[in-house]
Amino acid sequence: MYKKQLFTITLLSFIFLGCSGKQYYEPEDTSSLSGSSMGDKLIHYSRDGATLESGKVLTKMQVVDLKLEKGFYFINHSDNAALTADLQGNCNIVTEKGVVDSAKFPKALVAGTLIGKYLVYVLQNNHYGVYDFSQNKTVYTNKSNKAFAIDTRIANPLSIDKLVVIPTLDGKLTILDLATLKIAKEMYVSTESSLNNIIFLGKINNTLIAATPNKVLSISSKGKKELDTAVSEVITTNDAIFVFAVDGRILKLDETLSVISEKKFKFAHFSVAGLNKDKVFALDKQGYLIVANQTLSKHKVYNLSDVDSYAFVSNGQLYFDDEIVNLNTLSYE
Image 1: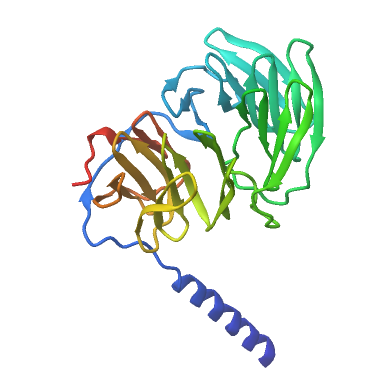
Image 2 (image 1 turned 90 degrees about the horizontal axis):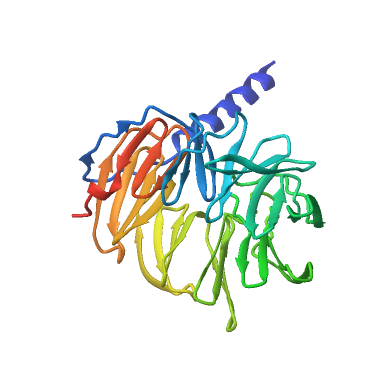
């Protein structure tokens, strides 16, 4: 009996110490800021967009009134069509006219990119492939290692000339030749056992940039460069990479991952980040909104409410929970 009580007391002590030891970002000076109600709510988040309860879609650049079918979520978009999917493996191509094409997969589609007549996709079980809408069938399929846990910020495949880079859920990049439907190259960004999927995939000039929650990788004709750090978010401009690290740092890097400038916000936990003109935005999970210039030499902190759910930045607007904030009106001075 005594041993059982001692074990219980020890366990409770560890729990108490673990909870009390959690540290939070505490800025010295803040400015008050209130969001306005948007009369809607974010219900799903993807790498390139978010779905609202009303069925509207937020892309990085605009709000699109697509009126998605119930149970369907936005995944990605091309110039004039959106890729949507549900949890049962159904996939719809939607325009302003409604559903114009559809496909059915054995598992839920979690990432995909429309390239001409093709849909290059990744499924929940880490199978990936190419679906040809002109033939209404899958013309290429493959699978990668099983992923036991994934980060919800799943990157979509990236088209580069006749090649497509497919980011798998186990941290691998598969480069597929769409003309021959053969693999040109494969490489791992990182090899962690869980939460290792590709969360960012893009390019600057001729340099490919990829990131998992554990590492950032730069690939060019000059070779590979790596940045080993836990990552909350990655955003690129025409000539720079902004990495929002889990330890509260914001890093501005060049395409070789060399540090241009850096600023640390101690114990900040970023839930979403964005760029707008000459400004950098980072929202801490407690509701502190950091606004900095792109050299990271100046910043200002605004105090919002806690972030309880998804958050997304679209065309200079911050959407979180059921609120919206106009980022264009905020200053770093």
